[in-house]
Amino acid sequence: QVQLVESGGGLVQAGGSLRLSCAASGTFDGIQGMNWYRQAPGNARELVASITSAGSTTYISAVKGRFTISRDNAKNTMYLQMNSLKPEDTALYYCNADVRLRGLRNYWGQGTQVTVSS
Image (tube, rainbow, N blue to C red; front, side, top):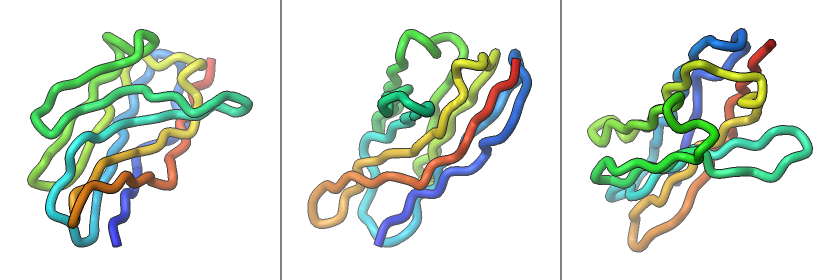
């Protein structure tokens, strides 16, 4: 069984920073693409940033230049450094990953809340 566990969320003032982590545990052969999604109340879940196993990254325009996605393959952990946070960044942030074990399967974490006050 594979688990993705997010941590690092919290309450921060506008302009502040937070660092989210997503740790994968369980039995698997490796992790390919990893992603951060977020969902604000009343909104659809949206893809925020992605990183390949080789380290290539993509971001939505709303966070480009403020957020940085990274991963430590040796620790099976992904990060999201969030700077210059805005109230509109308030959401539940989810970790998502394609995990290899006799094929490829997609997993989700439970989410970590990020609240940015104005």
